Length: 350
Image (cartoon, rainbow, N blue to C red; front, side):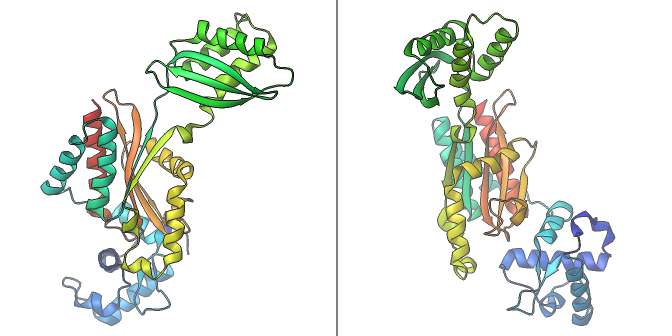
């Protein structure tokens, strides 16, 4: 493929743009490669099948279209889909029915958790894809902290949050760590760091050590640092992932390639990997589209992800909502739908 990703749409002739648009829209609608005769029958182009074949050949040479071995037609490459989505797609606002369905389902959830579950379900139903919602558990505020020895080189760190939540993690201990050292470290955390979030506790500890105000020997300092670090090292496992509608991924077109579908379903089970992918959507201001191999997670199964961040009333991103489906998604319809769902969740969070 000839590095077409950097070539602007303006470098295509108007005739090439017209043909390219028709091929992509027809392919996204049917999932099937499109032939020159089909295109010549579509109104508005006024081109002969021979002219269309020449243009399609040119588009193939610059990497925007490809021709599968089993068909005389052409289909967009992932590069072509990206160009279409970025430069040509006319996004359709969600219909009133879709808006009502999304708002109604989300507000019927009752709790925030219920609304999130409904968000993945309604997106799955409306898009005929798998709906996904990822929410990161809050950064807990420390109320109480303790260590329970498990063995010579391991202890259980127990954190009680201000909200009453209790979380446990296993901490590796340096050789020679005694129960009294564990108690000293826990006492320090409870006396000096209670009432802070884990991030704030880290910062306070660093500051006190740096300024020599931490009344701890080196071994106890190390224990406190390990005890706090064990929570911040596993952000991916702090993420709650809700997936609905996996069965939608096994459609008629995919049935011919069940290995691809099996692989995709396996990938959906890998919550840690999905959390990493969605993390990149968290950082954006708007809906992000990952097409096929643009994201490493789904590159093998040739799937696309459309994801948008949602926020609290204060504007802090708290999670991501979206869909996963084949690369031949109806992007023009689904992108605004995901965006609207994220906006509705944001409103519910305020």
